[in-house]
Figure 1: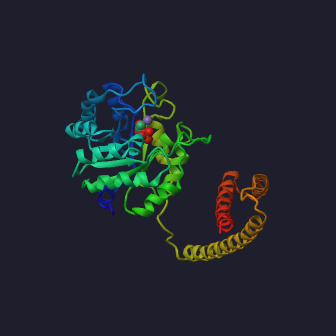
Figure 2: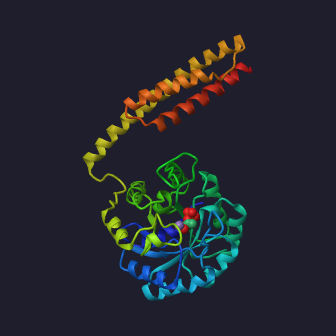
Amino acid sequence: MENKNFRTWLDDMNLNHPLVIAGPCSAETEEQVLKIAHELKDTDATIFRSGVWKPRTRPGTFEGNGVKALPWLQKVKEETGMMTAVEIANAHHAKLAMEFDIDVLWIGARTTVNPFAVQEIAEAIQGTEKIVLVKNPINPDLELWVGAIERLHKMNVQNIGAIHRGFSSFRKSQYRNVPSWQIPIDLKGRYPSLPIINDPSHICGNRTGIFDVSQTALDLKMDGLIVETHCDPDNAWSDAKQQIVPERLVEIMHDLKVRKPRFEREESLSNLNALRKEINAKDDQLLEILSERMQIVENIGKAKKESNVAVLQNARWKEILDKVTEKGQGQGLSDLFIERIFKAIHQESIAHQEKIINS
Ligand code: PEP
Ligand code: MN
């Protein structure tokens, strides 16, 4: 699938900055919605976001004002000229959002995980020219994200985009949802012209990280940002910790650096080519070393077979991991990186030895 329409729409907008979608996590009251919208009117924000159906982890918290809030968004459009966006989680939401002429519909992370719900939405909005944005699923599964996009595409939804909002993780981290940047990069590899919008608010879960995550998103050539913005964030009815005031959004947009898509000067280009050659040579060396290491692993596998010894030797594996982690620290390589690389090597080694021992 090649999606060109939302890309064309973006290009035609001719913005001199990334696309900005801003607004509160939830539409709380008509006054709150209009106040924020008026504060955003003269900023870089083109689209006003606001949840009216809120997927909350636990019942008993504010679950949104529902259909009652949709006319408030119509007022936003009338009074400010901004486009409007809401989250839809089922066919009923989709129909109501269309009825109230909301411009942009987004499918939330908890919905993207559910192919039944996505299919039902895709059928309800079949053929629409509205912009439909698909948030990544909460779990780090590229195929589920792609599957949701495909379902919309099959129903002839014309203007599809993606939102990268990070992934939940058991690992303790500075993020509410870890960005796992490689996943949106892989999505871009699949669909090069599909616009991807970054959601620093749901990635960070706090206000302080928003600038850095947004900058990384732009460095990775993402097309826009969706930022939760509230005139009184501390007293927001949902996601109070991560919302920023419109003035802060203006500062952030001013300070963000938009990178050029490629080197333009001849001399920088030849410098880059020289460095890339060096990288290619290092990659060749890495592959050779890995292959040589695997030969030794296979010899150990033969010895294990002869003596009928188990493939997994936990104490030895721990010894290796401790040693390389310590060495890596001295070489500017993070513990997490070393752990990932060596776990992958260990798994591959086990697979090779398994083959030998069972042959
Ligand atoms: C939201 O955008 O307010 C929201 C609920 O996001 P997510 O689906 O990313 O959790
Ligand atoms: Mn939110």
